[in-house]
Image 1 (cartoon, rainbow, N blue to C red):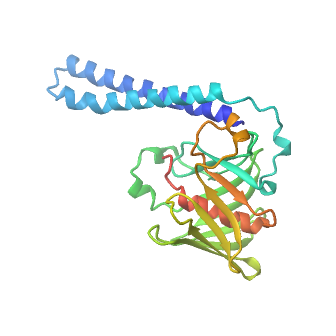
Image 2 (cartoon, rainbow, N blue to C red):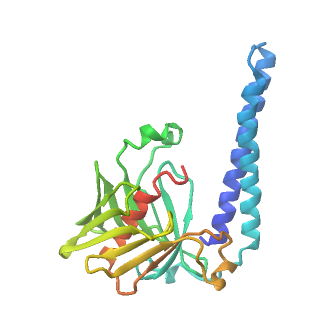
Image 3 (cartoon, one colour):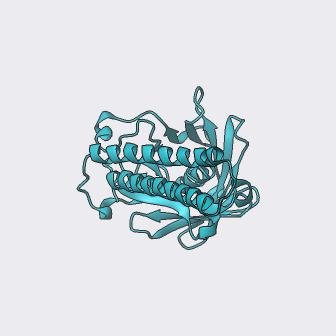
Amino acid sequence: MSIQQHYQHTAYISLNGSILSAGLLVVILASSLLFSWNIPLTLVAVPFLFFVFSHYNRYVLYKNKSEESAVSFHHYDNKQLFEQNNLLIGFAPAPAVRLLFFTPDGMLAGELREISSKSYRWFIPYFIDKRILKRIGIYDSKGNLEGSLIQERNRFKILNANKDVIGVFYPKKATKETIGLAFLSGGKKMKVDRIPGSMHDFKFVHEDGKTAARLQRGWMPLEWTKFFKEANTPVLTFDYTMEQVDRMAVFAALSSRYMYYEH
């Protein structure tokens, strides 16, 4: 998958949502006429019309992004997730979380999503679904499981591909400067801090004070913009010396940060 295909896929999901909303409205209006239901049609129609137009507007927006994005001609085989020092994040619809990681040339390097998810969860409220503990997989561009995150009551256990526990991540309250702490194998620690002056930018800091990674919005080199047409695409930048266990802790933080972002 390329970022262009992601834009195209998002566009047609939005178009289907618009068609579905319009279809449900037609069914309700036809039923009310057929069975002489005395219902406030205006109050019923307004929410459906809102969804019809909002989904259609999203369809047009992403269709244009797809057409404007340059075609990528690279192959998946060259995209090793844990060897990339710059990743751009795309969001895909999911019951809880699904992040797509792209390289600067617009190709998929991997993704983070639930290992298994029941379809009924699309229809249950957030405050109920958040009580369901998640099992989240870290996949490469070919769909191979590279690691997993097991959500527990107040933490995520971090497991490698062999299902060995290599660390834990503790989310903190979003109102604080430090929004997460990771304890990793080998006695290493990492914290996640807000970057001053921004609500959406974060840095991942080792115990010795060295910045291991950054997550920033609104920052993108000019040459990347021929593929990525959203100015606020989150950019994840790793220090080239980071080991896989450290990068998995960053993915755990992202999982916590973006839970229900595209529900």
